[in-house]
Amino acid sequence: MSSADPASPALALSVRGLVAGYSEQPVVDGVDVDVPVGRVVAVAGPNGAGKSTLLKAILGIARLLGGTVHLEGRNVTGLPLQKLARLGIGYVPQVEEVFESLRVGENLEMGGYLCGKRERAHRMERTLGVFPQLRPMLQRYVETLSGGERKMTAIARVLMLDPRVLILDEPTASLSPEMSRIVLHEQVRALGTIGKSVLLVEQKAIAALEVSDWAYLMVRGRVVMSAPAPEILHDPRMREVFLGGAVAELAEQAR
Amino acid sequence: MSLLIDAIGFGIASGAVLALGAVGFTVQFGISSILNITYGSLMTLAAYFGLLLVGAGLSIWLALAVGALMVGLISVVFHRVLLGPMVKRGIRPFGLIVVTVACGIVLQYIVVAVVGPTAQSYGNVSGATLRFLGMTFTTAQLVIIAITASLMLALHLLLTRTKLGRAMRATSANRTLAQSCGIATDRISDVAWLISGSLCGAAGVALAITVATFDFTLGSVFLVPMIAAAVLGGVGQPYGAMLGGLVVGISTQVAGALWNPAYQDVIALVILIAMLLLRPRGFFGAAWSSRRLLA
Ligand SMILES: Nc1ncnc2c1ncn2[C@@H]1O[C@H](COP(=O)(O)OP(=O)(O)OP(=O)(O)O)[C@@H](O)[C@H]1O
Ligand SMILES: [Mg+2]
Image (cartoon, rainbow over all chains, first blue to last red; front, side, top):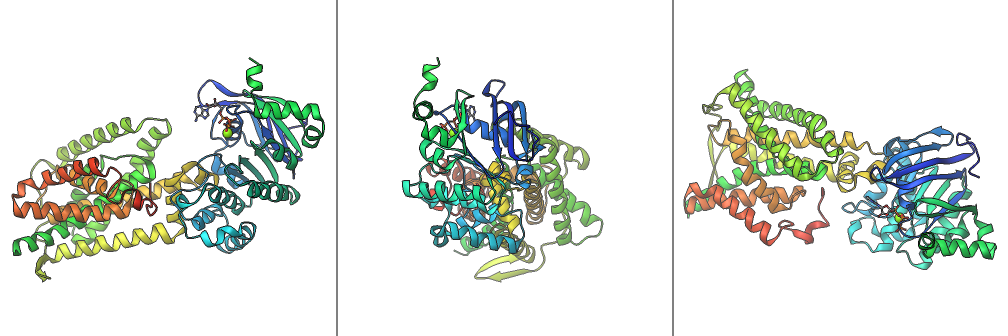
């Protein structure tokens, strides 16, 4: 898949030769990632592999040392985050994914910051249809919520932006198995079917594969495996390598 | 007894000025994480703008409004061209404080170079005295209390009821996340510095009105009780700063009346140190943190 033309409009997101980090020292070192329109693409890998850094580099948060990012065929390398939001990219970070000192309702309002009042009210209803648990919590301050309620608020907030491309960094961390299933199998999956494209970083490797069209395995800042997700799931050998790499220390073996 | 009640009345009046200053100071910290010590000299500058405007024939209250706005605009520029770029370049909070201290001293010297060291006055602007609940107020003091109360109410409504205010709080809470929602955080910062700088300017002119005569040290002397008020309320919390202003104002005036007026600043310092020792997160501490608006 990574042989495709990065400027092709069939690709919602296309990353080529990305080198990024927090200083001169690269943490992500020459990564290619493609997200076709309407597809869900997962990135897995052990802790510290550079998954979050990859996402942050795409979004112009981490320091970009090389490579390009295309959004729907348009070069957006190095554009500031706020411009990317206006261009239709939604982001749920792994940590600090909510506005702590704002109420739940205010968090959602900020998610819909770019649209008009009526459209925002409309999106609010739609989003609360997805997360009915949040409705009685709208007046609560986020810092009084449980970990799972926070995650729901974060995902609801990004849905309020109504983005065409979603970049989700471990959206189900601290959610119950039941809630994780709903978020991944219903939400993320459904996003794909309504034409949204998703780049998903997920620790729950099997669940991620189940809802994804394509999966990358990242180890120590590089992509070491890239294949259709169903293929990985159904080929026992690939599955073993992938899960081994995603969970345990393929990094250690490579030393 | 009547001495005490009078002191409370005077404390409320000076507390109103403190609250005005402390809220602006705390909003700057909340939105940008910068402890802006130049604030004191900017208050002095506002007082002299007021003098200029009164000299040009404006009424004292119009001069307060215009002077406030002028310092608001200067604050925006100060943040845009100096402090903001420094934050973006990753200069640490300590370095930033040193910069704002230095700028404050430079500005103070510029003021003294231009206007000279002699004390100035707006003339007699205090108006008739009124008695209220046993306390004596001048008309000017009452107007200042009213101005403070309405500005605080306006700020509260802005922060909680408007999209702009919520975007300011969102930017203050999590800048990156705010940007990911499409919020133009640099513009939001400009607005926050315009508002907080205007509060600084309003406090400077109001202070000059209440102290009768002032010189180039006006704002820098005021900085200690004002920071005490802000710390008392928990730095970054506007409501805390409002209450902190009142508490510091009343307690310093009462202490001054009961012991010796020379102890006023000492009392403010003792409050500051005691608060940092006992409740470093402010009067309301964690219990109030869920209500904090800018942190
Ligand atoms: N803000 C930062 N400054 C400096 N180094 C960082 C920063 N954030 C992460 N790193 C380092 O970059 C490397 C990759 O971190 P990253 O967060 O991208 O890993 P990850 O794959 O997302 O891991 P996890 O599964 O634990 O979330 C790690 O070695 C980490 O220590
Ligand atoms: Mg991560």
